[in-house]
Amino acid sequence: MPTLTISTQHLEQICTHAEQCYPRECCGLILGKIDSHSDKTVVEIWPTENAWDAESAELFEEMETADQPVTTQERRYTIDPQVFIAAQKQGRDRHLCIIGIYHSHPEHTAIPSEFDRVCAWPQYSYIIVSVKQAKANDIQNWCLDENQQFQPEEMISTSVNSSSIGLSY
Image (cartoon, rainbow, N blue to C red; front, side):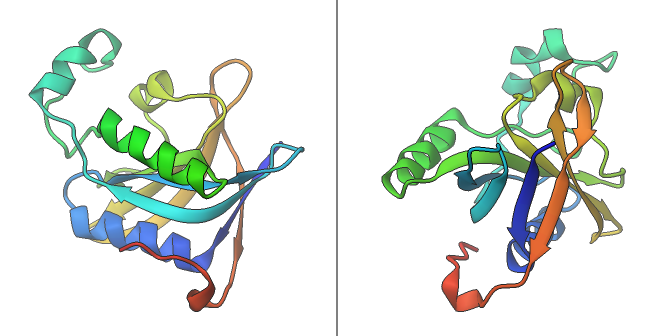
């Protein structure tokens, strides 16, 4: 099973973003490198705006697992496709690729929902932060297996000198 190596500073950046967005779900992209064994190394965290709105709810209505479409950012997130493309282009210019997506679960566990699973892509890591009472209290990493089911993906946390990484708050 592949692993995701991420610095403690990047984890802190994700948790801070989750706390700042509370009670809404935060979201962002994870840029980095993938080696020949499919192990991923995070180089940059790319915080994004949560673009979920009523139009998103309509577009995703067929995939929705709830009885009624969820129109609130407290329960759903989406990343604007133009932001996604910009991250891909800027990453490619720096020999990086999008290796994952992170988001938060306000007042819920850091376990993927069925909606998360249906929208997920197999090659990505999915970091989920549980935020309870405005404080990040758990962070987990997931990936899809060959049966399109989420499985825990090992996350190796490393300490690095903060001046050697590009934090983008």
